[in-house]
Image 1 (cartoon, helix red, strand yellow):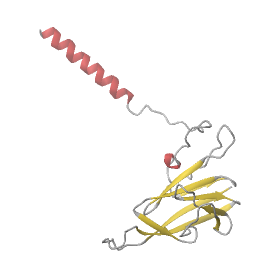
Image 2: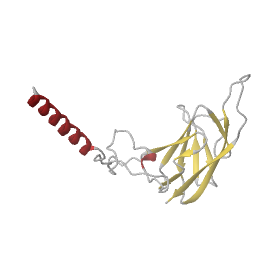
Image 3: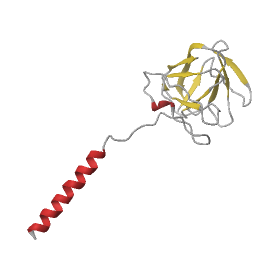
Image 4: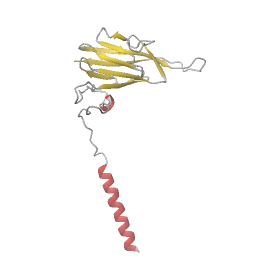
Length: 167
């Protein structure tokens, strides 16, 4: 009985050691996704370095997803002329500003950031930006809570800034 307990203890220790040795061994690929697969999240890189958008194997540009709640996440993006990024707005906030037309008609393109970007509002929601010409700009969105009429609403307003570099 004592030998059986000893063998079971040793097996448990070996299993734990094997599991712990695998911790942190996962790697992240920096290769672009193949055509027909979902694009990588722009947040896969630290916000201190601007994510750049790779071209897929089929030659079509990938579209980065930038989330907007009280801040942009990530807060910096780098892309080439012709590439696109989509700002997905949290349902808990309502943005406004020159780069965020309201109301925004689906199928209509608006100029933003001194013609460096164009913005449209796809039927799926959010704002789809296209890089038109090289340069750097900062898109500012005034953000406030998105409350229904008659609903108690927090009283705050903030500004979110997205730094855009177009090469």
